[in-house]
Amino acid sequence: MAADDRLTRSEDELAWRLREAHRRVRVLPVSLTQRERLSRRLLSICDVAKRDLSHAAGRLDLFLLDLDALVSDTPSAGNIAEGD
Image (cartoon, rainbow, N blue to C red):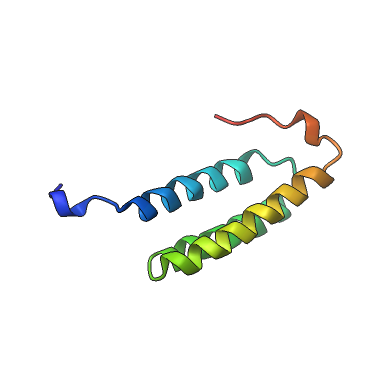
């Protein structure tokens, strides 16, 4: 890997947040249909990140807020594992 192939700080932060979002979706106690919908939405954010980091970061912020709301509305929200 060449030295100029390294990620910038903003790219690295977005990549970390996307990985965290994927982990959260994977462990979310929801139906398969709902998990698939969330996964598709997250994949579309990843696709946008290839072209426009700031737009992807904004969409990811909204996605994470929606995940937080979904978790707080889940009856077993207090029992959700942190994941691996």
